[in-house]
Length: 295
Image 1 (cartoon, rainbow, N blue to C red):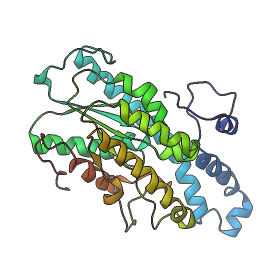
Image 2: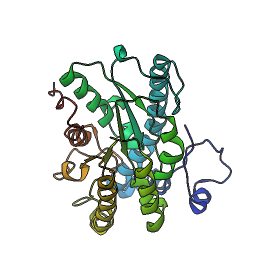
Image 3: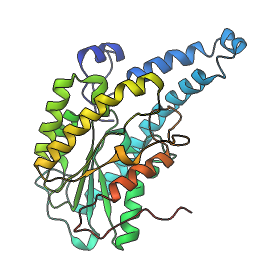
């Protein structure tokens, strides 16, 4: 899995001796790992802690770590096939795309673009939107998913952005949630503005979901900050005439069934809200698209 940026305090917390390309655990994963040890003690069995909400949450976070690696392998293999069809291994100097192979959508982002939280990688918003594009346009859309779980905004700017092939038909970018944990406000806003200024013309941005009504006090306390981040995204995008998919307006309560076992990533049902937000924001030059009907 490609490495992602982390400040010095986070590197110390997650293991300074790890390989540079090893995935870094988030603070949430560290708490869950410690919690999983605690909930496996005899005392936890006796007290009911093991079977309680904390025990289930800790198990869910740790299970998600395995999905993170598996989903990354899926998209890496998928991308190899797409790039082979382009006759290039990526980069801004790639050759023009053969129209007969179908239009190309390039995805930039983090674990939500990987689909983490869904039952399979294709169950995330990328897979659902791809199915919608194909069904409604009748064209064999392809997707090159350059996202990496754990990415910060500066990872998109420095690593993912230069890999966009020339001639992509659609580029989308959803990033910023991880920055809340690892980046100071001043740098977060500066990084977002720098990224948006560097994106290709016509890129569709995704704003951040609002944690209203979930995560208790932590969710309520973070809403003003997330709103401020979203205002920055919308303002910087408007300055370049870039459309923004309003995840904040589509991924909303009631939350039942919309979160995965880690209570952080969307579930497959939750990603349907994300997919609707993106499909309604595809530039008007495209044929209007909707999600395929549920089976």
